[in-house]
Length: 204
Image 1 (cartoon, rainbow, N blue to C red):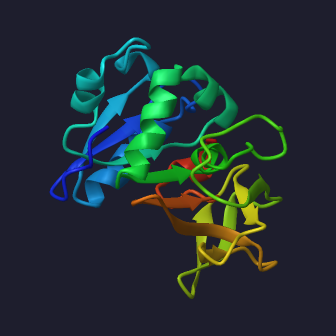
Image 2 (cartoon, helix red, strand yellow; image 1 turned 180 degrees about the vertical axis):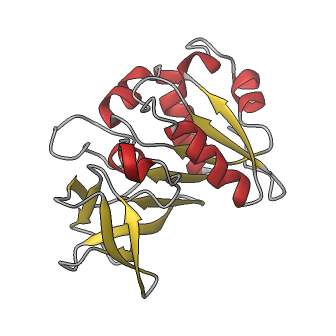
């Protein structure tokens, strides 16, 4: 994709294979709205496997960030055709943003958690499932708080280019951000975007 416009206001929110059915995409879209962006839900079929360069550019036109919700990271990544996988990585390299919640965080690294399966590879270091509680205590940007959690990762083997932005009680990293190419990547194991009803019924 061409270099993202600095005035871009669209957030592509993935809602395809692997994304949990309990409003994970909608919660991610609402987080984008609150950040002042216009969310647009997309699936793997939103970009054809034989899409031309012009069609890829049109897909990412006015897009500021890709948001990857919770669910099942391997299913989401492997459910995308190679054109979408490659163009997403190129979008970030060129200056786009990537936000990953839970499964979206697992998906961003070279290997998805402890599965050994390949991921997007835009975040250095490793992820592994944290052993937490639904109402998880974290220290977020220096402030103690409780955030919804369900199966999300902690991050380790992080180089100095990664900034930890949240920690679990055992001091492992719960959220972090870094630069990839000209783009920015922000990942969270817990769900800061979670709607209140998840606390009573659970999500992913």
